[in-house]
Image (tube, rainbow, N blue to C red):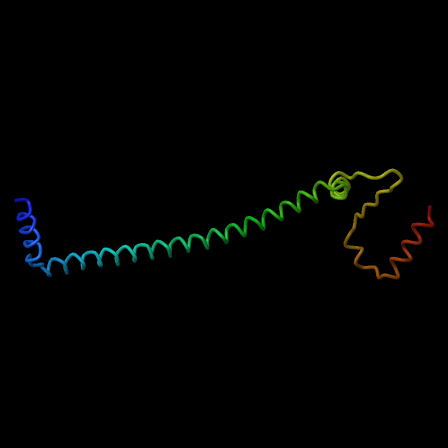
Length: 127
């Protein structure tokens, strides 16, 4: 008896009519969802690529600033930097050095090279 029931079930499946409108509607909905997902992913990808480009530019600027700061750190830590700033900012002198202060700096432009040489010789030999 089990055998005839199987046959009838198989026969029913074989004879069943497929509603093509439903199949086409399901395929169309799936295609629309697929296209919608692709467009959304494409827009997200463009947004992320734009963000990545902006971050790459920011990274390049920060690396440039980092190099400049590293050079400044290297310079500031050197003895030459310390000596220059001690002399210019604080007026330090090495032993045996003499400080010259120019009171009328605008007068310096009035002398030529030859006059400077003569003045320098006068100052050296006046002591």
